[in-house]
Image: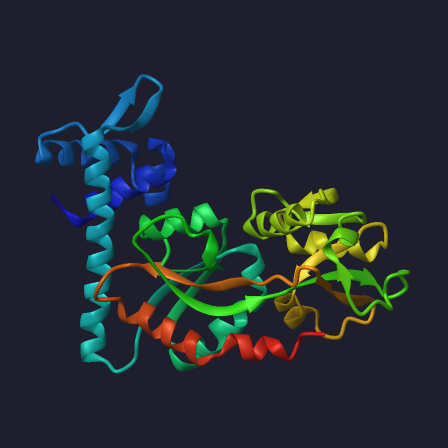
Length: 305
């Protein structure tokens, strides 16, 4: 059995199609099939469920072997990075980040100091939903997640708190509400809104708050992209709700006003999430240290209105 055979198996699990997996690996489909057959022979059990139409899934034994393969590849990469670090004072390699859409607004507050301290590490930043982040961490597709800590449902993940977010109503500067110093959630629920999609955790939190005051929001437009929120809010036809972390990006945009939403004044915690395993890879450990030193919460306090 060769290490690359495990990589082929993981690629097949990701693509769930022999042809696409072979293409992603830059090998022939027959080479991929032969590698899987080699693994099945090595473990003396069927791993892949096949049909005339192609890949159908994994056997129960195959799922267990797949989980072991992911763990083995992650351990290999961790040991490789550790050995390189032993011979070189500078960390190298890669770091794969998966962030909830809302957390993308503060990405550079994490990546900029990390890249400055560790220029030899290449950083990949992907926008993912909460379930995708959890699954990706468990399957070793990502190294670090940045998301809502209250939404973590899977075991085996280690959280680190970054900051608590508060919520604001964004309105155009010429809107009739622009002079308000605060607004109740119940009143916001009666306004025409553009909100994030119901499957995103930010929206789940917002809907939960509305429910607590007995209101169903008038979500006229729903989007999975924050830019969509700003674009529709700017027309004046719809308003939107954002966490204060967005003000780091919005800065002094003159065409908007932000109004704190109260009654209840609600917060939600954003943090790092990593796989619960020891030892932690040097790159992940370094990122966690930089993130904690960055004091994101204090940095964002200056953008509260």
